[in-house]
Length: 500
Image (cartoon, helix red, strand yellow):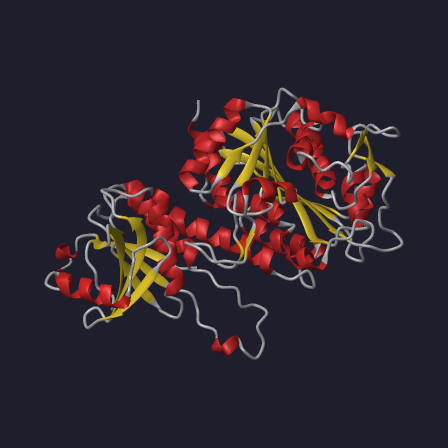
């Protein structure tokens, strides 16, 4: 995690500047005439950049060896404009940070005119300073460390707002990093038990209340979804429930995350090509837990109950078979026609539990579930845009405002009532999925979950199947787990706290 600070002047021997282009003409950002060490070198640097073939396109990073500073790194902004979006600044800063692996410190002199732009640059640096090397053996010594320290250069001074923005960026970088670590950890080392143990340790260090239900307790208490998905594995399931309740909280939210630490597909076995990515099927659980940690660290006045529904979906003599009937917490019976549609089963238990706890605690202001739920999400929206479905337009509007702050891409999707007939069962209350009818699969999954949420309770379903893991680094996002949703959930809590 990079340590962040601010200054009105550059002092490091590594300097980051922006670069854009329009009609083939390069522009350096900010105007380097305001940087004393470079004031006379504008033409010289532009000539070097042209010789190197720099284009200034987004995600492009061009390194120029210099004298003072020793190294100048130009990060692409795309088409030259008067000003740039916060996400453009965030991505440019993050791309530069990823390219500075092995460097100890750097100054980031990017075009900043207000606190929001400052925060975006700081956040991009914090998110880009990440590397996952835990499982390297003999090659570990050859690996370089991420950027350790960065100075955000601006003329805004070191006000309380600036200090708050720096702290927020560091906190987001820390807990997005933890989420990425969990996703990148192989299933040989991350199981429901080890996930729970790691997160419990962090929660207790933050003073957050922890409850863990083991496989015996889950079965005895009626958590049929989590139990049935996990019963085929040698690594038993868990429900991790963490609770953050500040003294004077204005709102109360609940987060429920899908935590399948590995998904073989069960007796609907996945193909070999996609199965290796199934270590990421616990991304939702990682995100809701990490977001709660960030909210607690920032001391936001919003109470949070987070539920990680953890299981490993495997094949054995104990595994759930197609056509088995299970009972979800609360009594709804499900005919499991597709054991590879297991995420909605564990989430159903989690949603019911969250609703029950909300009633006991005087009510919830909102409920959010996060899951790598359907391949249909990837087909519909690709690998960088997640889906949001809801029973409450006002709550969705608030969440989309939060994503506007975070820069994470979400797109609203409908929940058409006519698709509910796909879930009809001749033997139980519902089926979980019909392998013979995959039309509207993302929406059908949302409709399934909607059955476990009271209509009066504002609820969001976030399907992050594509964006949770990437094989191509971009902006502030490295290869592997992305940590998507953590920042949006934090922003949602901030917005909820600001409401009357």
